[in-house]
Image (tube, rainbow, N blue to C red; front, side, top):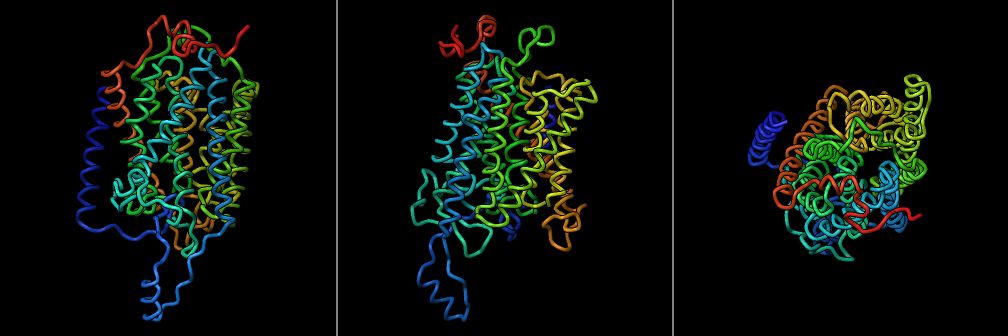
Length: 471
């Protein structure tokens, strides 16, 4: 483990230095806007309009469509539904009953903490300024974000209120940090979860979000495609979770005692709410209520359904039976894999991505998990890590117009795959290094793991003084 972390640190340091030198040597190139990379634009001033008129330029007037605003508010609500109660119930049903409330509490508190930090400085660092790696503090405490300030969409003259863009992106940051909870569930201190989340959010989520989506971002300027967060959300969180599983160690009795989910009914309900909320996650990233949102919507439906079928088929072939847990996990795998691709591939491409993700994520939580030897409690890396990598890479394939994607006529699968792979590697290395340092800091400050007595009794009683079920 120490050798792995040392290698990652060296790799990250070399890449960081190269990126910084490139940023200093030349200004960032112009790039097509990404769904989440909406640069903030104030309402056009009269002097600017007069200048344009004097130069004979006929620029269309900026418009804010009420339908777009209504859709973005709805999409934001749907993403919140994904977390509370969707993710919370999905995770809660998978743990033992004595830890049910601890998982619910961790998800709710992490989401709340990150939402507040996003408003204080997160939004500014992710979407302010035009640095290659991180933004600026120009919008700290949401300075300049008013009822009049606007954010860009895919259409040049169509804007949305910056306020709703801030809220929408806050939900992405919140769910990313909440996803990590599943890797170290049932054995981490409550306060340690919150401190780790704050550190990792600041030094991993914000830089990766800016590089992929922010104005001037390194990966955005390279042409990386990530419509709704395959790298920023899923691979990013999965790596942090995997490192946490290693650093906290295995649960007491892991591999010797049965640790079945205490309520697959709640897990199925949670997975279903995730599926519903994911339409806001993916289609909302279009930022407009247009055909682009409809494409992302349809792809989210088809890829998820295909992954459910693939996972269940794989289980039936391997074990002789298809399980409810497998179907629910397959749904999440499909949702994860289509996230980076949903606005760039065609419906048939989304089905293929879902099928591939279903089979590979099933292997991720069985064969790969055994190879890694980590107690990733709720298979965050097996589903979100593997699914995110599959989706990010296949985006570079199925975005090709010849395969039904939305890429330009001169789209090159080989070139795009290289860019996609670079984004995946940067995200994995960056997140792993930051996570390792963050866990170590938390361990030194307050300790990471609960005592053996607390773990055996269950975290519901020992940390929250209540039980999920009273008889």
